Length: 203
Image (tube, rainbow, N blue to C red; front, side):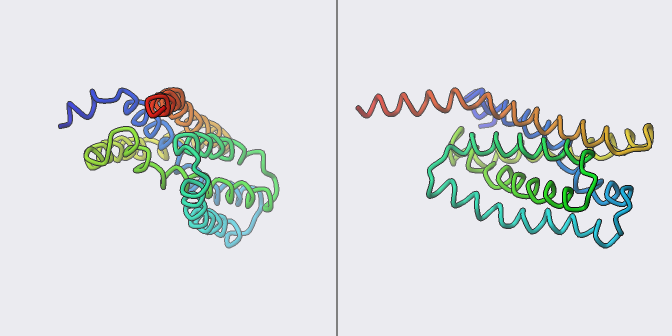
């Protein structure tokens, strides 16, 4: 079953690589945004509330994602790719934010974007491999995510220890998320072609 799953559609490898890359930078904002805010002179309570902003907007983002996919009929691969790209840009933009309001806006956009990414993973896998392969496919995605999550925050922490600022951590973390978006982006052409083929067959 597993060999069939990996050989059935090579695009699955783009999903695995995309998840691995983006998860290296995924938790950088969660771990280091409050500390970055405190470095700017923002109070501890307000700095911690930035995580609440991410959480609140993440909840709202999951609902919005469902609305977009179900009612607007937009390709889940496209939504995932755009959401990851924006999340990476927001992560890399954190060092450029010099006010609490700017950090709050970046945190809010990041929360919405990662909500779409997390919510649509199982949908994307079903579209690529079918419901019958979802359990094994999602299991390997979680495995790749777990390995990346173990790597990401320590690397970001080592960069801070070496430089004394969080800027490199945000830049590299954001870059990894954008690379994850690029990996998912490679799926767009095959998905579009497959839809066109289905339409032509029906005609």
